[in-house]
Image 1 (spheres, one colour):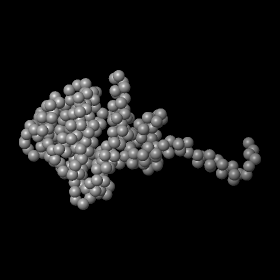
Image 2 (tube, one colour):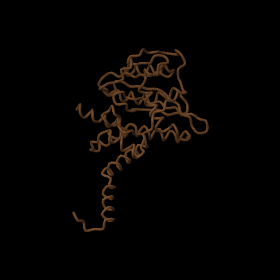
Image 3 (tube, helix red, strand yellow):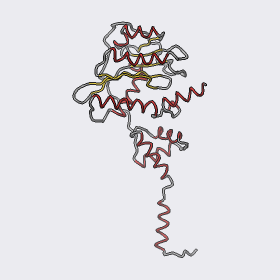
Image 4 (cartoon, rainbow, N blue to C red):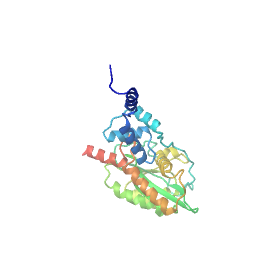
Length: 271
């Protein structure tokens, strides 16, 4: 076969053809997803995000492309918790009704709560008290304070109790044996709404694994490795993260949907 162009031009065009990247568009989309979630998505969550956009890509291919692009999701780093609200038996200690049965198909049937501590710029502290729905791991209410007072945990409880009025089944709320949850005011509020109280065994954080996992994710993705912030700056960033976690951060166990997306999806299926 005779080609009517110089040999050097022929080899140049052949090389350019080989240089064309057939996955360029996919690589750009993978990079966009990775960057949009601040580098917190590994290849499986990126694959799920692609699927939600209508692209069915094998997870091994996503993993290979991410490795090529140097996109590596942050690994979970375990940190010991410095805050404990346990002060012995100072009020009512409830039995463990859940016994690590965290799954439920019904919204607002099983809730979990706990308190975690953050260091702030200038030596201050920030305390966070969220309440999560075990149905979809959604943060349904939360409190933020500079001091771990009783009022600090009662406000998110009141917000949660306003929601459980519409629950299909009687609600159980699970916590550790911290003094807040043994307090008469907390116990009375639960009884007033006919909410079952459940507590982890003493010194057994696995009994409240949902909260431990949430605190681990939150601190990994927006606190560890970052410079210290003032109380107000950190409070704002935590509020922003919780909104992102509820509405945008997909979870594998929720069929690649965020907690809010999953709640809306299951409510539509049940209707």
